[in-house]
Image (cartoon, helix red, strand yellow):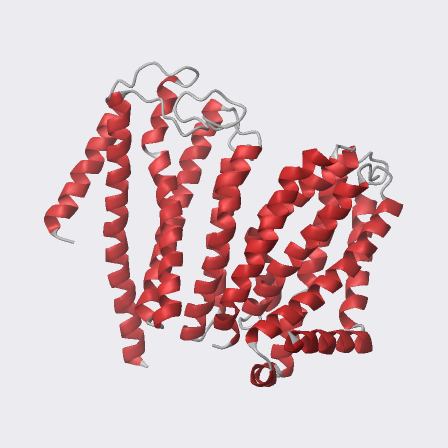
Length: 226
Length: 220
C-alpha cells in the first residue's frame, strides 16, 4: 500500500471520529446521543465477521492450491478478526451498561459475538495443537469452513426468532435499523456511518497486508534457519 | 455403502467385545447425574432449568465418548489400513452411524435415569421430546464425529475436543434446550416448529459439509 494511502486512512478515520462525536444527528427516540456508538461499534462487528469470512476464504484457497501463502493469509485474517471482535465486544458491553443497565445480557447478538470469539479461540487452539505445517494448514482451514457454515444459524436465525434488546430486535423500539431492513437515519448520520464503514474496511486491508508480510517473512526465516 | 456398513459393523463388534465406550459412558452418566442430584437436594429445580441440565449431561457425555471413534484408529495405528481399504466417505458414514447409535442408546439411558431421579422433569408433550431427541442427537453425532476426525490428528486431543465442538454445537444446543423446555412445559407441537426446523437444517448442513470436507481431513 502506498504511503499516501496510509496517510489518507489516518485522516479519514480521524475525521470519522471527529464527526461521529460532534455531528448533530437529530432526535432519536429512546437512544439520544447514545446512538453515536453505531459509528464505531457496528464497523468493528462488521470487520469481525468480514475477517472471519476472509479467513475461511483463504482456507478454501489453501485446500484447492496447497500453497502455504494462503494458510498464512487465513491465519492473519483470523488474528485481525479476533482483535476486532474483542473491540466490538468491549465497546458494546460498556454501551450496554449505560443503556440496558448491565454489561452482559445474553441478547442474541451478544450471544453471536460470544460464539465468534469462541470459534476464534478454538481455531487458535487447534492451530497450536498441530505441529506439522501442512496438516495444520488443511485442518484449520476445514475447521473454519465448518464453523462458518454454522454461523448463519446465529447471525440470521437466532436474533429474528428470540427476544432481542438490540435496537431493531424483537422486543425493543427500532429507531435506526428495523427487522424489515429499513434504516431510519437522517442524512448526516448516514454519511458518517458509511464513511466509517469505508474507513474501517480500508484500515483492515492495510493491517492485513502489513501483517501478512510480517508473517510470511517470519515463516521464511524459520524455514531458512532449519 | 458396503464400505460404510463394514466400518459400522467393525466398530459395533469391537464395542460389543470390549464394551469399553459404553461401560465408561454409563459410569460417566451416573457420576454426573449424582453430582447434579447432590447439588440440588432440597431445591425445587424449575422445569426449564431441568431441561438445560439434561443437555449439559448429554453434551459432556458425548464429548467424553464420541471422540474415540477416530482417536482409537489413530492410537492403534489402523488409520492407514482403513485408508487403503475403504473410501473416505464410507469411513465417515460408518463412524457416523456407529456414533449415532451410541448416542441414541446413551440418550435413552440418560433420559430414563433423569426422569426417575428428577422430580420436576416430567414430559408433558412427548411428541416434541421424541422429535428433539431423535433429530437433536443425530445433529450432535454428526458434528462430533467430524470434529473427532479433526482432533484425532492433533496433540492434547481430550482437551481440544469440547473446545472445538462447543461453538459448532451451540446453535443446536440452544434449540434442543428450548424444545426440551417446551416439551416439559406441555406446549403444543406447533410452538416447537421453529426449533425443530433449526435442528433439521443444522443436521443436514453439518452432515453435508462433513461429507464434502472429510477427504481433506482423512488423507493429509
